[in-house]
Image 1: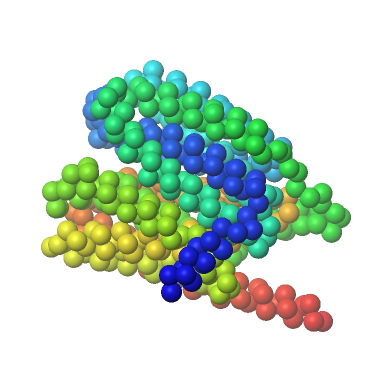
Image 2: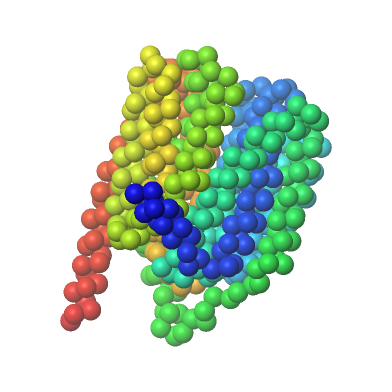
Length: 413
């Protein structure tokens, strides 16, 4: 049994291109260095003495900037290519992060966060498109999973090191580390990974760029984007209402909350690659996996309606972690699979924007519901988001199956 597990784990990393491994390394360096963001609300409240309302508005500008960056990144990726967008996005955002430490007014910080995220999040759709170029079609999901593994490793390393740095030398050092690691990681990327153009479109593929083939007429994709938005509304509760709930309901401190996040990252780092490899061998459809993920995400908040035992927090985290591992790699796979040649950047932009919109609305809505009605009402609301995502996932399966059946009939006639 142990030998089989070991072989499965080893095989899950086989066949990935050298460029994907370099991309994962660069992503890990960049994510490990992104230390200020997990502590941003604490920095704003304690060091800059912003009110809770002002902190909330900074987060709104954060989300709006993320949406703008995702849209710009997708548009520019289709125009000038993913490589240039990735390079310039990280390089410029590196200098912006360094400069952020000198902003200390509420209005200034709102504008600064809007600008930084508008530049930094151009990277995301470009990076997703790069996976299509640097990996074989059959390895695309595992390539994304390897990059996600690098992100989660960085998520485990970065915040823990940041806590020590804050105690030793304050927040200003974090801004320098954030900026410098952005710059170093992208310079390393340009050295290790050479620009690779997408295949030249032939006349048949060019026809796909007609307005009828654009995202706006792709009904299944809009159902899918709605599911992604609801997933984001659920998932971002982990970083907003839940840490406060840990303290106010169960008296847990930052260390306990940090250990729960560490559990999430550790499970993903250890299990996600072999899980994805096993799923690929079973050839389970992406739409089914998105459906299963929606069920688990809803369930993770249903169990929180029981508030008499702190151990329920661990159970909830385990459930949402498995849901995240099953769902998130395959939402990306589905998005790339729907993208028409030449429109990949636009498709991936809308994909990332669905999560950015959830980042704008989710935290504020959740905190407002908590302040007015309490945590249990908020968890019930989030559970309903999950139930709606389940219903939409079933609809998506039917629509995609009907679409496939029509194509099969058309190919036979």
